[in-house]
Length: 118
Image 1 (cartoon, rainbow, N blue to C red):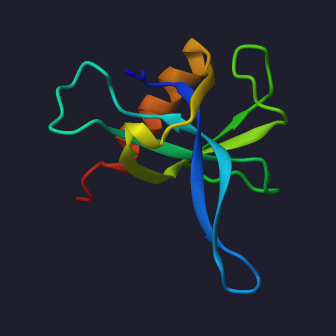
Image 2 (image 1 turned 30 degrees about the vertical axis):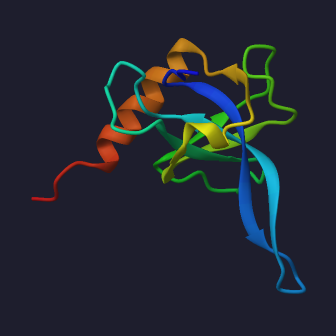
């Protein structure tokens, strides 16, 4: 399946339990790659989404309030500084999408992240 920039999907995130055992939890993430780009593999770039909203929002974080459009259970943070690439086959399902304004903001923040320091 092809995913579009701004799609919110569920993926298995690896973590290590308190006892040291590797585990996985299903977590939401946001697609930040374009389906219009031909890729050698079925890889998808994602940005992490967390429900832990800090007191101070960092420059590359975007608050996402829960809505029928995004299907998030609670208000969350889109972390555009926490990017990963995974095989598309690891995506469990699409649950929603960002609004058009959020997509534009997320795109602008990703570009800002990759500006060259002068």
